[in-house]
Amino acid sequence: MTELWNWRIDGARPVEVYPALAEALGRVVMPLAVADPARLPAYAVVCDVWQAPGEFATVVDCYGVPEQLSEHASIAALARLLGRNCLVRDDTLDAGRHLLVAPDGTVRPVHFDVRDTDDGEVLSRHRLCTLGDPGCRGWSQCHRSQWAPDTVVPALAAA
Image (cartoon, rainbow, N blue to C red):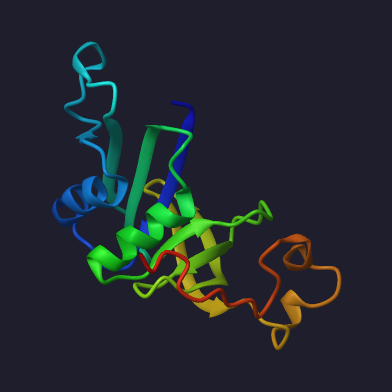
C-alpha cells in the first residue's frame, strides 16, 4: 500500500462521498478522523474528505491505496456513482492543470487559476486546455503531457 490520491469533486457533500468511494474502490473506506492504524483491516483505504472554498470544493485524499487499483478507473467510477465531475492532477506538475473526469467516464485536460489561502488551494476560472488558448500553445507544459491540448478520451471506465 503505497499510493496517495488527491481528487476534487464538483458540488458533492462529504457524507455522500464516503459510501461512493467504498463502492468505486471496492474496499472498506475509513475516514481519517476515526481510523485506528492498529485496527485497520488489511483491505481498508483511509480517506479524508472536506470542503474547501472555490470551484470543485470537495477535496478527497486517499491514503494507502493498493497499487493494483487504477487511479483513473477509480475516479471515473466515483464520478459515475456521484453523477458529478471530478478532478485529478495531470502529469505536467502545473498546479492549475487537471484532468476533468465526467460522470460518463470522459476525460479531458482543463485549467484553473489557483490561489493559495489559509484554507488551502482555491480553484477558479475553469477552462478547457485547448490550442485556442494562447497559454496552451507552443512552449507550454501542456505539450509535455500524455494529455495534450484538446485531448478527449471517451468512456475511460464505462464498466
